[in-house]
Length: 104
Image (cartoon, rainbow, N blue to C red; front, side):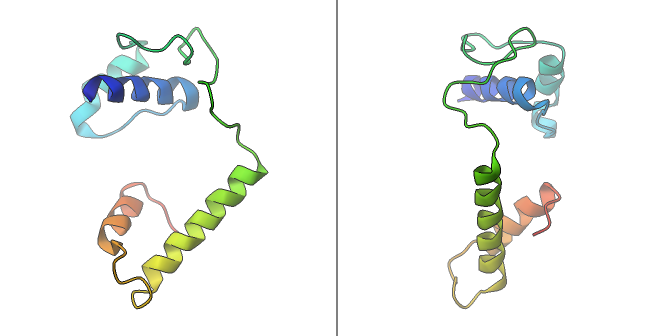
């Protein structure tokens, strides 16, 4: 759903200051940085003029940080242990980690 993706990209920009750097959405990212708001963008989501959190977004906390650390450890364990996790999509996961420059 391209329209929903545009809304989520705009929200991510206004919430985190982040835009997708994929070449396929380069023009859209430029528009979003310039203030473009997609049609039907929810009133309860942030914009340049509305510095709010969307409904049901949890604030960053020590509990969230701990959950991130646990998930990273689990992913690393699955990447490292092919015998115990033979169906784990190692190559795909490693490609994503490489793309985002994430080191576990």
